[in-house]
Image (cartoon, rainbow, N blue to C red; front, side, top):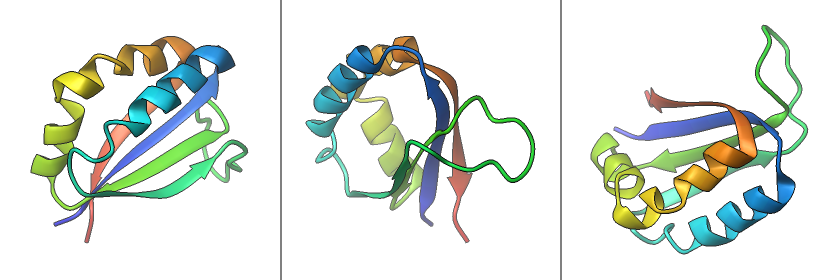
Length: 95
């Protein structure tokens, strides 16, 4: 079953986020995944999210997600995203 990583945030440090994005690109081949959405100006229709930036990645399985997310290559750079943004990430099961 597919799973989706949904990240919503406010960008606090654009330069550091750019460094993260450049570095993260090199990790995208670890497992099959699809970038489904990347929007810097998401529109809130309910509630109060941390910010307007939303990213949605699709993974073929939760195991694939963990293979990527827990990999030494990704763990070496994810701190840049954490330092550059304020927000949250959730993992959602597909139907």
